[in-house]
Structures are given as C-alpha cells and as structure tokens.
Length: 525
Image (cartoon, rainbow, N blue to C red; front, side):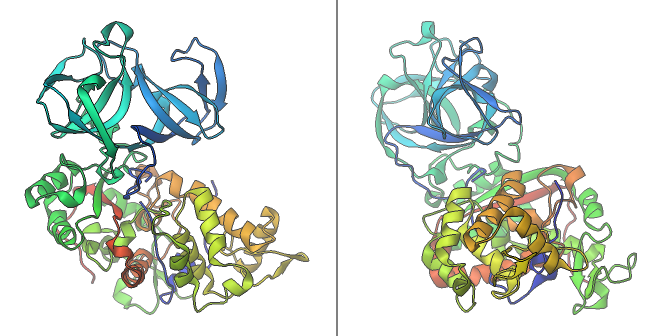
C-alpha cells in the first residue's frame, strides 16, 4: 500500500491544533466500558482470513457452504462447539455465528479474531467440579462451592458423548483462570461491563503462555475480580504484572490508576529490541523536528533540511519521544488511547467542541457528518474531526469547495497531498476518489484511515507515529506522520479537551508498547 504524506497534520505538526483521540477495541480490546444488550453470553468478532472463510451448515469442513465471508466481516458469536473430547485447541473449535450479511452458520474458531464478549454474571447453585474444557472427559480444574460468583463468557457445547447432565456448558472465569462448568449448576445473572473481559485467546485453558497477537492486544485483560475499578492496590499490582509491564512503567501507572481507577492499561509487548527500532526510526527523513527547536535536536548525519523548515531529528531526540515511559502521565497518556468507535462518549457535543471556532461547519463539515462516518467505519468521530482540524486549520482549499479539473472536490484529511504542489495533488486525488461532497470526503477518509491504519494494528496516535506492532521490518514505514513530536503535542490538547467535557472520567483504554532491552532512561539533549 502506497504511503501518502499528509499535508499539514503530523507532518507539519501544527501546535495550535485541537486533537482528541479515541478509542480503545480492537483490539483488545476494544478497550472501553461498553455494555452489550444481550441477555445471555454472546460475543462479537471478525473474520481473519485474507482469502475469506467459508460459513457452513454444520461444524465440519465436509458440510455445505452457506456463504464465503470476506476478511474482516463482522460476526455475532452465539456459541462455541468443541470437536475434541480432551483438547481445547482453537483448531478444534467452531463458532455458531450470524454474519453482518444476516446469514447464520458455523465457522472455524481459528479463522476469527478481535473477539469481544458480552459477559454474564453467574452463581454456582451447588458444589460442582469445573474442568479445563467442556465435557466430562476434560481434565478437572478444581471444585466450586455453592454460592461462588463466576463470570460467564460463552455457551460451550462439548462432544455429544461427554455432555454429562446438560448439552450446554459455560466457559467461565474464576480466580484468574478459565474453566468450564455444566450450565445446570449455574444460575445466570445480568450482563457485565466488558471492561472486565479477559483475552481468552492469549490466556486459554490449554496452558499456552504465548503473548497475544497485535490484533488481540486490543482486548482488555482484567483482574480476577471483574471491573478494574474494584481492584485493591495488591490486585492492581498483580494485574500490571500479568499484563507484562516492567517495573519502570509501574510507578506512573499506579499514579494514573489512583486518579482514574476505571482506566484500563494494556501492555503491548512488541517483542522488538529497542536499539533495532531506534535504528529504523532514525533513518533518513523518517523522524523530523521543526527548525524552531534547538540545533542540538538535529541529526549530524543528515544536516540539510528534509523539507522547508524541517530537519532530521537525532537519535537522542527520537529515543526520548519513542520511549512510552516518558508519557505515562495525565498530560500525555492519550497518545496511547485506542481510536476505535465508542458511541457512549464520542458524542455530537464533543465533536462540536472540536470544530468550534473554525469554518468547517459552514463548509458542510458539521458534527453529524463525522458522527455518521465514525459509526460506519468503527473509528472515533472525535478523532476524525480533530484530524481534519489539524490538517486544515479549519479553513483551507481542502475543505472550502475548491475545484480540480473543473470539479468541486474536498479532501479534509489531505490524503495524497504530497510533492512540490501538495494542495493540487490532494485535490486531484479527491477528484479521482469522487469526493464531491463533504460527507463523501469524510467517509472516504474514514475508510482510508480505518483500513489503512486503525485496522492494521496502528490504532493509537503513538502507533501511527511508530509502527511497532507489525514486526521490525515495518518499523519506520507506513507511518502517518513524520513529525517526531506529533503524539506529544496532540496528547496534551486531548487531555485538556477531555477534562473540560468530563470524558477523562470515562472507562478509557490505553495500549502501551513495551520493548526488549530498553535503556534505563531517555532524555532530551
């Protein structure tokens, strides 16, 4: 995919811009306090198969095909079907689902990712054995007493000959691990907030210790007691350790948790060595610093201006802005906020706050346009409005109805705006895409950002600046902005805006990268 360079945004780093980013899952997480409407345990997920996946009439590859579902097709998951008496391997599990096209059928579980659960509370009715998988042949995982509180994740169907007292078992979470229990032994309660959802794929009862994939890392991994805001100090410490946060991250996260007990922090273990990433991020023209900053910030390897007013930043400066530990505070934490759609607090009033004081609404870029695009493409409308304001300053040829080849077009995100005449290039790109109205342009840009970044594991401002969730070979490439300070600058304004609107009190989720062999500290020259 060709990487376009945005005209003003992060490339130019306009400090006056008002940027609000948000999140959370999606991965993992998507990371918020969303509550499903379902009265029974269900889940949602997406097809994860580049060539598509078959939806079948029954849970076997020999059954007839109902449909072929494209990659990233949304699914509602009603139950899981186990094909083995003794194994909980995902390759031996099927899901019964309803696809976004309305068709129902069965799909292999290993072809589904980004799973989020509608958790249901439960109470054990009488003393019962719990097992590592559904069915009486699965290994025993302990015993629960009458009255024990559990969290139910999904309806699980064991192999016919191992059902025991009921054809339905429940996958439950209790005391820090997953187990399975016969449904007849459980009294179900109400739907639970998904902020308490644990990433089953990376914590499976098969005992695998593998780290979650980048797509799974946006699922919230929670404590043994449910909602994050109920944790004691000791339980929160245990949570941070299970997440994989190093000790030098924890001090700052403790302070943030004390101030915002319902915030969720997810460690994204990149598996990358710090110095390897730093080398990629200090390659020519990858990380730029504005000329107004001290000359000591500039690279001595690449001395000339990368473009008018911008120089290559040196390794010391890049390291400082790349180091997540420097920004785990209330002013800058928002660079790690997930950018998925969260309708509970990404409201019209918030978007109106973003575009106020500009001419955007008068040109047709009103709050409803951003809200509709956000909902359609599962991306934060607040983030979309903020990015347009950052790109255009609220008034430019990209949004005021300028013509390209005689056709009025709009390109509010300045996609394709590069080269010696970026404005003209951007408008030509908009004409080619058919962006002849503000709504078409916002929808087109939202689709581009969602498919090109948000859904490609670059679902925070930090990850759009430092592409470290897709392996070392991609670090320093496919990055939306070259301005090394863009996440730093945006995060502070996000904080200010969120505080004014009370959004900082919501159950926000943050995805925070962790590297191997990090230095003891980093600092500016």
